[in-house]
Amino acid sequence: MAISPILLLAILSLIYGNGVLPIEATHHVYRNLQTLSSDSSDQPYRTAYHFQPRKNWINDPNGPMRYKGLYHLFYQYNPKGAVWGNIVWAHSISNDLVNWTPLDHAIYPSQPSDINGCWSGSATILPRGKPAILYTGINPNKHQVQNLAIPKNMSDPLLREWVKSPKNPLMAPTISNNINSSSFRDPTTAWLGKDGYWRVLIGSKIHTRGMAILYKSKNFVNWVQAKQPLHSAEGTGMWECPDFYPVLDNKGPSTIGLDTSVNGDNVRHVLKVSLDDTKHDHYLIGTYDIAKDIFTPDNGFEDSQTVLRYDYGKYYASKTIFEDGKNRRVLLGWVNESSSVPDDIKKGWAGIHTIPRAIWLHKSGKQLVQWPVVELESLRVNPVHWPTKVVKGGEMLQVTGVTAAQADVEISFEVNEFGKAEVLDKWVDPQILCSRKGAAVKGGLGPFGLLVFASRGLQEYTAVFFRIFRYQNKNLVLMCSDQSRSSLNKDNDMTTYGTFVDMDPLHEKLSLRTLIDRSVVESFGGEGMACITARVYPTIAINKKAQLYVFNNGTAAVKITRLSAWSMKKAKIN
Image (tube, rainbow, N blue to C red):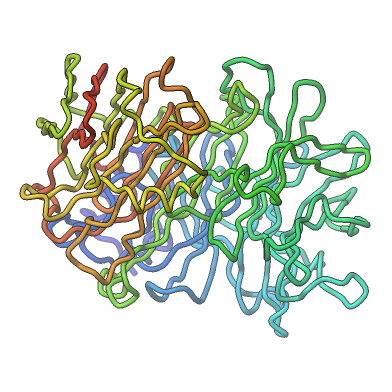
């Protein structure tokens, strides 16, 4: 297949314009790019700066890594349609985590150990900088087994070709190891102990007890199952996409990340699992005893009020990587659609990834903090800044001067009339509380926040807001993302999400950052202490008809101490 000179020039411009190392002018890289239009008038729900391929289904981010100055993102992908199936590892590269260029699929069914699918896994950087991927394959018996792939050419910074180990599968369920062959998947990034053994976790379950099965290896090929899981919990069901990594605990503000193999003083560990039963990513913070290979969480799954989540909205199957050059840990996650399957097929695509987030331990040591990577700010244009403003009860102010369907908004509130806070007699699940007391329900101290994807007559809007309660003689901050009026199309999932934010509004300003991108709303409350992601598909408030407002539906006035908003340029994602 020949490439016209005009197309070749466009391809080279794309690659060099992104600052990516040159790729040979070959049709192989681009053969899958015959696509649907990405024009916003034809595709109003297609995101402009969130990662998604040009068409078809995607889910879990897999094996993210940085190699020879380039970020590599692999992801579960169906090359044949906008629904799950025919899963391969698609592959894109970037030099800034914002703009991405696709390559050929990296891993696809070709061995008996993965002939029925190449499912999720992780990358580990071995000594001398050699990448290795462990991933779940589905064998001819539909059993889940673990496989190894390494680059064919280590000198290729694009890592375009991968070679599978002839010894695959390296880990498999047997009668003797008591592993459920249909619940044995998603190996983590491996870490190296002082004893010279690599360790890796595989998600699994026995009946309703979810677990992270531990394997050890000296050479990364011959793996032996440990006598006990690293951790397990009754009643949690299947643990998918486990992640295990250290975080710095220095009792002060620090965003520094740690290499996956680090342990010792001032180090805590995080165990994240994606619970198949709830479709949420939960995490535990605790202590890792590497001599006994046991993880002991500060709070376990037994207490539902203390189990933490990365994101309290639509978010799943996340994966972190450590960047040694920037000393940060970066989190990537998958967001599925809220639209119906027929609508997804009509769109021609399904699934996106969230903006990569820097992640670290809060100074309290009790939870993690997340914030969009700073590279995203390169897309900001046409800033709008407000002076301090008081928003009276029942007032709504329009934010003009920004592209409301494609924006980045930061706002901080100051509240004073705490005597008007509603009293909460008993603890209520925050998501249920947000559903009962949505943006349209008047309160005392709140609801106040943003109306995004709002139509001019407010027939449609998505509300992201705070509401303050008095609970056990303390101020309790509720953060909600209310989708109940997000669309006139009732075929969509319009679930309302919510969480409590562990902060004191008497001494701290209530901050909210919201990334708005055509059909996704990513919100960060309390400087990243609480995150909620929503997918919305308005029928009126699309493209230039979308409006953005600050609102206060409480009786108490609130003060805006800061509002900065930017229109966002379209990222180069092909």
